[in-house]
Image 1 (cartoon, rainbow, N blue to C red):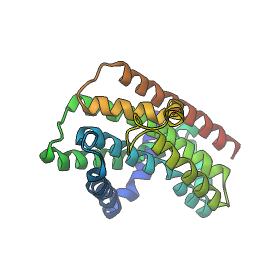
Image 2: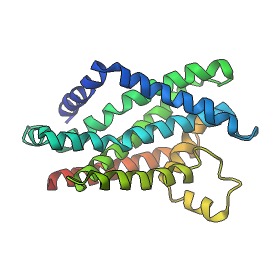
Image 3: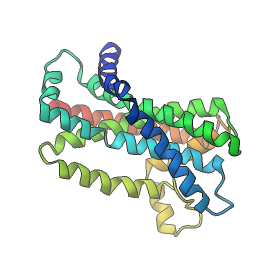
Length: 242
């Protein structure tokens, strides 16, 4: 399956490398977001050490949750059907495509760190590396779920975008990516405990702050593994029925 995943990953990544402008745009976008939104935060929570990991996770969530739209284009052109009749395994079709979305995420993280270090962001390499590994697992799961949604909404693209947008922003806000939830109402903090993204964001913040071995990191890693396993299971079943 590793060989098949590598083939799919290379196939998906090739158009991105041939069109570097899109990659540059995805790298610049979080920088603008950081520059425009971070000054709005209260002084006690506006630290770059708190906000940068949240922006990295948010960019990852935005990027991987729309990967199903690429599959919709492939279904319209017929290239998806040609991939299905190839000897490539079904999980590799999902994992290879989802891993392609990791490349912009890694590039965005590097750019964000390079931009924010001169402004006081403290770089902890080990924590950042572990954080990106956890985030990779989470991205694979979200990407697989996005592909499953694209397959379920075949021929009705509006359903894909409606569901994606309806779920994306509540998940993002309830996870406390943009604003801390400590001062929020009890029902909001209760909902955040059922959101796996909450644990991933908390783990990323701890890791980017240099704390590698902690219960928060373990919970974030477990949440990422569960999302990856659940996403792949649902995605592979959806592709098998297709």
